[in-house]
Image 1: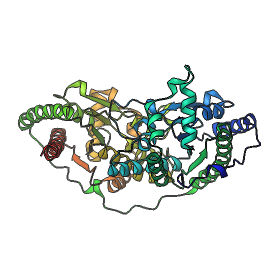
Image 2: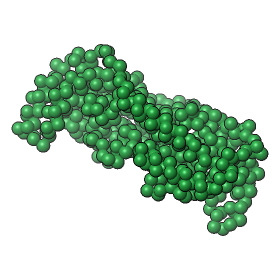
Image 3: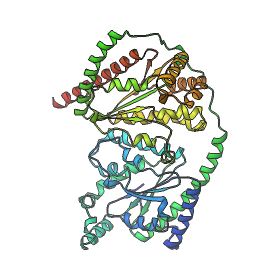
Image 4: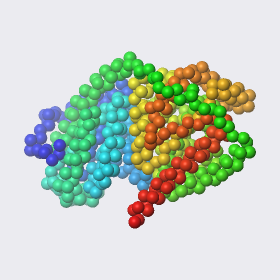
Length: 495
């Protein structure tokens, strides 16, 4: 795509338009996107000193400032290791907003000539999955690569260095790219070809003439947004009538053994030892920079809070954060449903505990009708992909589902009304009336998301003591496995 690019033959369809005219037309489509709550992402990548700043200034000039933001990807914090796409998730636009990226999540991928091929494959797959997920969620994605010759890049670098107010624009990256132009061209071409997806294609634009490049990007943006607004309108109409196929797989919840119990004396002795071990293992994970993501799901009154509090008893409070997941706020509703969870994933060496989680998409939102059939059906794949990304970044992902019987839930509800009325609401009783609907949703969820890399741990919580011990045991087991895996890898490296 880049190697065969002929700069002499590049001619913009929009060369005879004025930038002001094009800017006003783009602003009119921005208003349509605001009204119809369609988010737009525009990535401007390319060579260093290729005029990205010039182009972006012209791109946003006529836009409504309340509904666009510009992010400079090169300045994102890289000290605290998260998943590869985490910085991009944090800056996703709300519905109806434009997000313009100076560079993008492609920046590191494009600029690292010594990158590991296997790691590149993983990152490219993660980007592909993310862009497809956003496309499916009615986001418009535009990707532009500003291409220039070695000679033009050198001229731009020299021009900046000759002006004391612009010399800061030239970094070692600019100099190195021009010096190793052919190597970078080969590398850029490979990455661009691998990430030229049908749902998010690359547009290669010559920036030999900066003004012409700005016109081309403005014009292409208008053309692409116009076409995709119509696509999204049609898709939204289709989604209103689409119904998910019936689920007839194994009934996990009904068939699960809820009879296991622990006596009080036995429980205390086991619990204290496991809690002490959990504290030590958490320190080891922190030292080894292993992030841990824990999900606690279950029926109402299944004892999630009690299980969490026993698990963290001896774990340093500075190393974990508990994220109680309730109904999304207006800001959270304005973004992709996974956005709020990516914002709370842990740094390397820390623990994030989710008391309810992204699985609400395929349980509460499904049962209560907050997500349409296409949205919650698609979510199984999206969730599995997200958890795989966490695993690929070195995380431990633990998922607990606490199960109780319908009779036991009723008993606990009544006990709460007498002893802890603040822990029971009318909504709890209302949800209980839809027990069968929730059980069906749980069965289907477990069937579709019980993966080899992030399996569910189903726990009988009919007896709370037994459930708490099972959670502690599973955490300790998985932590020891991860520590052993890392130590063995380090030993191999040192040989």
